[in-house]
Amino acid sequence: MKIDSGSTAWMLASTALVLLMTPGLAFFYGGMSRAKSVLNMMMMSFVSIAVVGMLWVVYGYSLAFTGGGLSSFIGGLGDWGLVGLEKVATTEDGTGIPQLVFVAFQATFAIITVALISGAVADRAKFGAWVVFTVVWVTLVYLPIAHWVWWSDGQENGKSGWIFDLGALDFAGGTVVHINAGVAALAVVLVLGKRKGWPKDPMRPHNLPFVLLGAGLLWFGWFGFNAGSALSAGSTAAVAFINTLVATCAAAFSWIIVEKLRDGSSTTLGIASGVVAGLVAVTPACAFVTPLGAIALGLVAGAVCAFAVGLKYRLGFDDSLDVVGVHMVGGIVGALLIGVLATTAVNDAGADGLLAGGGFGLLGKQAVAVASTLVYSFVVTFAIAKAIDLVMGFRISEEDEIAGIDGTAHAETAYDFGTVHAGGGASVARPAPAPVSDGAAKKVEA
Image 1 (cartoon, one colour):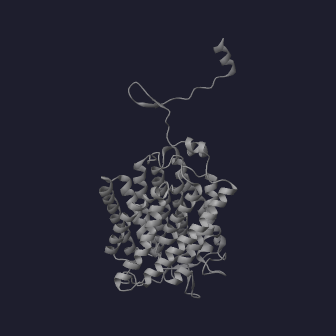
Image 2 (cartoon, rainbow, N blue to C red):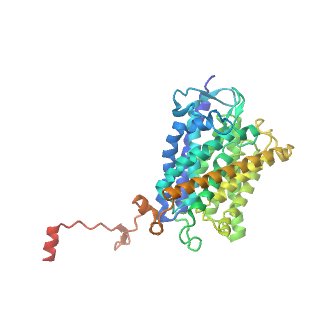
């Protein structure tokens, strides 16, 4: 099969864009955290890149995207280590890209999925326990669900993951990434418990410019996330690109309108959260709906998620940075609205939803995919988190939490607060006292 250089170039760029999303997430989450835990929060995203990137090459890709004895549920180890992997991945126009480009592209999806979970446990998770959780969770939760939804070997023997075979649609990760990460975050939160002082003590974002920077980087990278999932620079990528733009615009606007009507003011945190909610919701649907359908989807998702983030106070679970309210709820909204808004006039590889005359069949399939992801991810994640908590402890001590996890876990602080003001009003760092030898000390005493 001929390798298309244009599509290969687009996929290399898309892979870089999606990888950029995880540092973007680090800024987004870091800005929402308190000053004494921002480094730990950002570190959890960066270590996800380090760990999952290696794991993906060793066995992750093989289990997610190859066949095996239980090929409907999990892949095999035939491509472990990527030894001799010289295959060509087929694109929509019948040409191809090198398989290793596809491997790298999918690695970035696995990386950001586990990083998303970290926002729910800000301020209180042991860093070493988080690293262990990353390895086990990706292996037991992410890889099977990715295989269910995306793997197909139809050209050779007609086998595929069971959700793919069902006919449920998820173009770029509504179930695999967002619902999966969101419900997993809920499970881990229930194991770790609430932060000290929550919800009575104010735990406001310490750096809203960081939040806006992170949201902008996420939006920029998300074009690779969604349009790159077409695997070629063609018409499907084009519709995914425009839908990613307009759905996000609609969700951001919808969120701040809800804030204005409910709270009396629209906030920077609100518009940044609305951006992420729109990106989440359009992810599974971006290649299956019209641009007008994407706007409608975004308007619904922004409003629903704006209300959903407040449920943690009513239900009593401390989801620190609203992972459940944005990613789980936004992912559910996007996945289900495919069953309403999808049309084959946009993509004949999809199906017609309710409004396009397709009846309730597609909506039912979407509901099965959503429910299966919710149940499997929650149950297995809860078991993983509970086991880690019993074996090595998942939560830091109360004293370390009060002091700040940056200093206790990483021996660093993000900001130097040890400053004094010079006579002219300039802020200067206070120099550390010079060491005094025993001999000098005796002279001073004399």
